[in-house]
Structures are given as C-alpha cells and as structure tokens.
Length: 123
Image 1 (tube, rainbow, N blue to C red):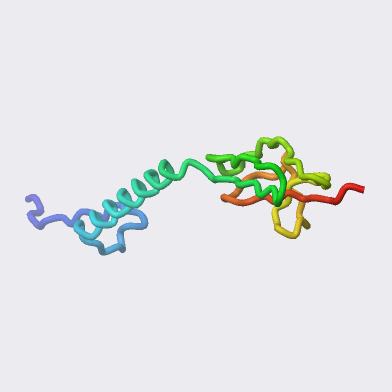
Image 2 (image 1 turned 180 degrees about the vertical axis):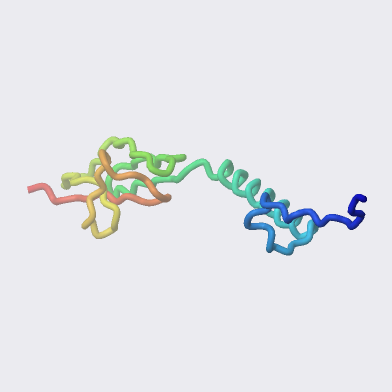
C-alpha cells in the first residue's frame, strides 16, 4: 500500500539571502527600471560633459588661451608663458595670491579651474 499524503518539498537552498525577503514582483520591477534609468542618465551626463576647462588669468600679461576638454587626472600642456612690460613671469599659481605654484609636470586636473600668472618686478 502506497502512502497517498502529499509530500512537502524541502525549502530550496538556492534562495540564499532572499529566502526571508518579502518583495512583490511589481516593486522589484520598479527598482530594476529605476536603476536602468539612473545608469542611462549618468552615461548621458558623462557624454555631455566631456571634460574640464582650465582658464589662464595672465593678470596684466599677454593673453593665454584656455585648455578645453581636459579630462580628470590629465596633466596640463604647458602654455606659452605670458609677457608683461617691466615684470618677470614666475609661473602659474592655483590661487590669486600666488602662494601655491601649480606644477605642470605632476599635478593632475580634478575640476574646471583658473590658474593665475605670478609676476615679479624686473630689477
């Protein structure tokens, strides 16, 4: 005589962390779609903002063109030094007070910025 009682299947061990999570399919679909939309927006934003702009303020010297579309982590190309009557160019500085000299060989771009020309009077 064969046992006719329905057998309860053992709980699947493949569910792992999700066996205690109670979430509806509709909610899960919303989360997934929201994640996809967010990723698409980030890609579009990244394409629209190709890089940073570095402006050179010669502070009374000859004009120096800006460097456009500089990528994060890139080094700047050393521009032609500006000239100014009666002054000697001392380098490009990250601040208007010319206290922090920007090293074109090692310092990397992390944002759009302005570099300021440093000047000393000719002796």
